[in-house]
Image (cartoon, rainbow, N blue to C red; front, side, top):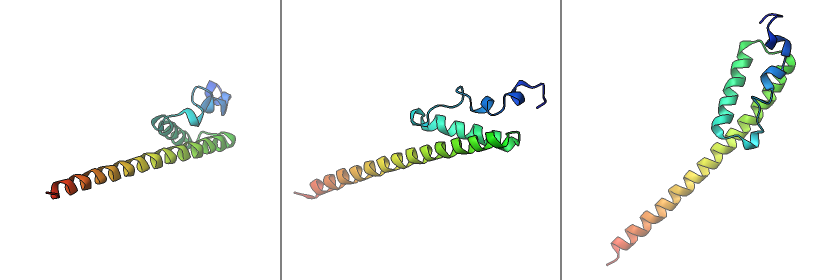
Length: 99
């Protein structure tokens, strides 16, 4: 970027403006994961200022924690479904084995 480039003059605001940042609590897993990918690309570019890097890392950490929580919830729900299926199967086998 050059000094004539509006993004370079806008600083951190250009990357973390309200068009990109949504309250993490209202984000879906997919939206949060996509935003983390954007943050990683920006950090990998090496063009972020120190302050912007700090803000992006903080945002990324929050989003990763959100994603981890979502995955944990889904995992627990899947485990519960597997247990429910096991109970049904055992009940069915029990009834089938009873004369």
